Image 1 (spheres, rainbow, N blue to C red):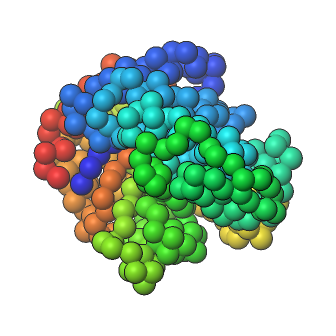
Image 2: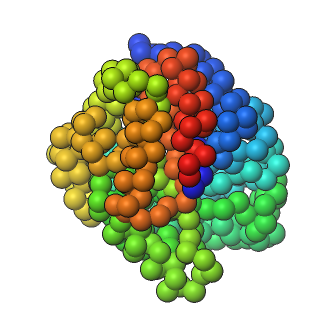
Image 3: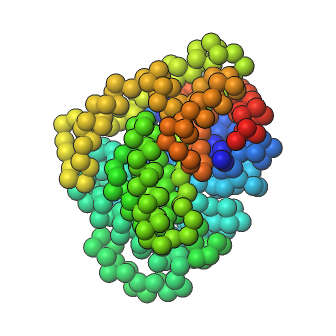
Length: 348
C-alpha cells in the first residue's frame, strides 16, 4: 500500500490566514521525499471554509512540485462543471511538464449547491457537464488536433499546448462518494477511483462494483483505488485523541454546513443527498474512528486500525491522508507524519 499527503483546507481567515496555511502545507510537502510519502493531493472548492482556500488545485501543486521531486501530484479533484475544458487541458499539460510527468488528474462532479448557484449552473446539468468535460479534455490531451460539438462547450479543430509529458495523458482518477453508478462508470472507463470512506462497510460493496466493471470492460489488472482518511499519529493515545478529536469534529461540522442547502432542495442528478447530509450531521470523531474513516492513535493502534479496515472492505492501493486538518499546528502535523512514516508505513 502507498501512503500520501492530502491537504483539505477547512478554515477561514479567522482560524488560519491563507498565507500561513499554505506556508505550512508546503513545509510538510518538503518532508515527503525523505519520509516516503507517495503523493501530494489537494481539492477544488469555492466560497466557503470547506475547501474554499483551494479554488485551483493546480496552483498549489505547481508550488508543491518544487518541494518534492519524487511524489506524485494529485488533483483531488478538479471540477469540469465550473471550468472550460480548453483551459483545463492546457493547465494539465503545463503542470505535467513543470512536474516532469508526475501529475495524476482526479475529476469530480462537484456536489455543493451553493457553488452551482454562484456559478449560475443548474445542478441538473451536473452529470452531462462532467462526462462531456472529461471526454473533451481527454481528446485534447490525446489527440494532436481535436474538435468538439458538445452540448455545453463547442470548439473547432484545436491543438492544446503544452502537450502532455505523460502519453497519451496523465492518469485519470474519478472522485466518487456513495453512488454505485459512479464507481461502475469509473471502472468501465478504465480510470482509477478516489473515494471518501465516510460510509463505512458500504465501501466494500462499492469497490467491488468498481473492480467488476473494470474486469468486464476488458482492462488489464484490477484498477486502482485511493481512499482518503484523517490521520494523526502520536506516541500517547490520550494525547492523540485530545489533539485530534475537536479538529475532526470541526471538519465534519464545516462539511455539513457547506452542504446544508441539500436539506431544502433536490436534483435528479443527486438522488438521496438530503439524507446524505442528514446522516453526516450525525457523524462524530467517535463514529469516524469506529468506521475506520479516521486513523488516530499510537503507531501500534493505527497499524491495527488499518488492518481492521482492510479486513472489513478488502484491499485498496493508496491511502490519501489528511495530515493537517482544520487548525492543526505545523509542529503537531510534522511530528505525526514523521512517526507514521517511521513506524506504520514499513508494516504495509
